[in-house]
Length: 284
Image 1: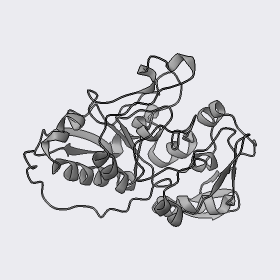
Image 2 (image 1 turned 120 degrees about the vertical axis):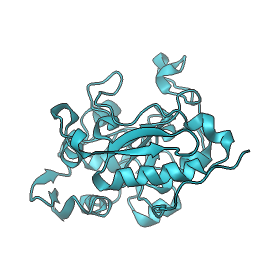
Image 3 (image 1 turned 90 degrees about the vertical axis):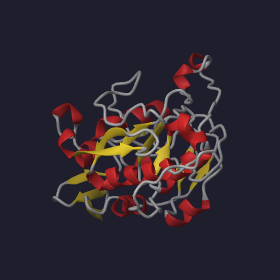
Image 4 (image 1 turned 180 degrees about the vertical axis):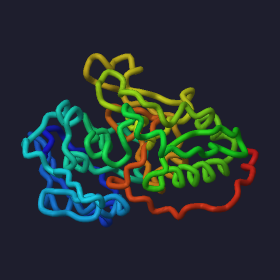
């Protein structure tokens, strides 16, 4: 599916070389240069324990079931792209990994489109009680301010978040106010203002401390249709999450700077899992 809104110019070179899905922007929208097969194969690399193969327009799961990659509905406006994306739509906007903090282009929300059937199949439908049995508890910031959090164990998400926690735990104390207390992880709820299940409902997301975070719905001009970007989260924190395959809501036009979620099809995790025991952070 092609999305009829503008695509920003900045695409991180490292991500492009790993996953060469290229796009070109025009006045009417964007055009994907890669074939559906190339895009679909990114899901095999991202979720090897769940997805076995690509057969034409179908993702083939390891249990033998199939999910259509492209629903054949043609160009979608932004609202439809968010409300009813197919799997191909989730790749439409490249995620600018490693970039600085700057205002995203109008309606550029890489990762906000989530195909419900795909995520229900991958992680379970929380409304049916399918996610809770797969949750695993980790300790957030074990030496700074220990806090138990639950995330899914599927696809190694809990291991990744535990590794992120250990890296953040070693940051100087000046970063503490951005990290603790975490606002939450698993929560079977819909996204504010929508009927769509949140990434938190799949156990793949975390919201860090609210006190230093910004959200587009809190912006005074949000109702006018022109959203002024604001962010206070240090990039040192963002880049640690990104190295482990977690995208950041601060890279969205409809920004949510406390929000991180595991999306390896957009951002392959490159950091090794850190098995070292936690050590106290530097006191500065």
